[in-house]
Length: 494
Ligand code: ARG
Image 1 (cartoon, rainbow, N blue to C red):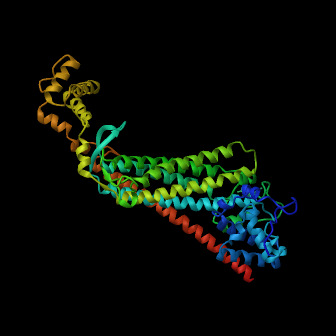
Image 2 (cartoon, rainbow, N blue to C red; image 1 turned 60 degrees about the vertical axis):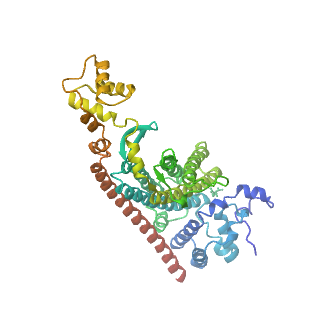
Image 3 (cartoon, rainbow, N blue to C red; image 1 turned 135 degrees about the vertical axis):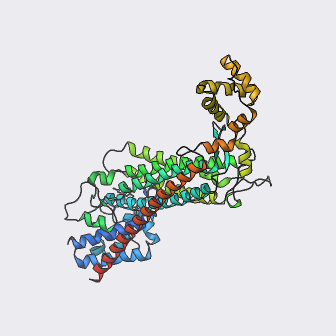
């Protein structure tokens, strides 16, 4: 016997055209929450039984059928468009399998509104934990590569022009710092996501003597939400995670952009592993960085998902409106795009081969240590920085940073020759030395190896803290769910 749509049959007439059913259906996106829905059904039924809201003769077979779904998975038929969504699909299948006397009691004291909100939060908190783990791996790789490239001098750029020498470690640590903040944003959002809407029913709660705290605890939530209308209608936590993912992807995309530029022949700082490259169907010599290009584009998709979700939400009156269903496909797509990107980016970086000689050679180009020379004039000749800046700038404009040109530039800028001890060849060479330039920049967070070593140590400690939090939270949830299943099985056995 094929199950009928039990939600629709009482109020609405006639068979629905397949196009209308497909248009209304959330089944594709609901595949992401089907597992969560079974857990929610189990927790809710167990609570109904414990509270005496449904009797054992009805509740036990219902719980038994739900446990079978938990162990065997939700059958494909439950995802048929005629049910509109997986909540109606599962309920309809249960009624058809065990009869309405038992299956028809599942939806007592709840609505699909609190049900879907609960499922979204369960799937979302899992996604946040998985994204956190992926960020932790990526940061670990960045720290490892940085550890090995503290002495790898390279040019730093502003406006994409040679600016001042830095190191590869320092450059990569800039991204690691951003990904550490992304991790903190994930863990912050997690606390707001992991609260239970179950029991809010349509939006006004219920008159049955439910125990919303027990379902929250059984499902691993930290607490219940404080307002039943907010519980079903609020999607700000979804928007928050999307916004955090969008922000994270801007950093992913910038790192990809650096890698794309660096792997071009013009720059030649890095060679990405073959596995992450593609070639051309016509130009046999080509080795294109397609993986990081797709990643750069994924940032656009995630930002688009974030804006779509915000625009869908912003005009909705309280409380539940069906428009909310249209958000989740954007959410799940953004989550998988983001996670795949950070997962793969770790591999890209782990296998990248940097041309350290080429980087070092380029580090001294474009008068990249001119600032050091100006600083030297301030510190040794007592000049105001602006005067020193003008002298060195004029010497660069005249074509060289050598003692004679600096002498002439000093006269042009100040009207006087440099003091008695004008600069010698060796003094100028010393001030312009790239190695020295980097080594002197030992301020907190600077590129000098001594400063970079300290940063790496701090970041590793932070990373370990984040990893411990994620493992603890994962364990806590797994334990709660295992407890739920155990309690449900005991209830069925009696
Ligand atoms: N598929 C729906 C969603 O994602 C579930 C809630 C349906 N509620 C309703 N009142 N029609 O939002």
